[in-house]
Image (cartoon, rainbow, N blue to C red; front, side, top):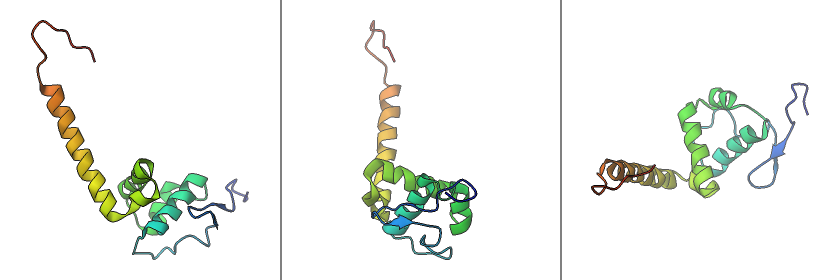
Length: 114
């Protein structure tokens, strides 16, 4: 633990310990899967906060949230840009189906329970 109460190192996505020094450099512009996973591991392990990661890497909180949702949904492979695009489309379709289902009237005389 450091003086701030944070860990000095946390487990990385490849099993190698991550420190602030081994994280991707702040000027990173090409976000490959491994780098995204390292930043998320650092946040989840308490090495830095989401706000600090956003400031350090010039990311929006929404982008960081999308990365986390992709990992939650499909693991580290979900961080591939093509996978994120696929999941966004699937989410849109599922939301449209839910809206369509909710808008349909039920059979006459039958009480629907939520």
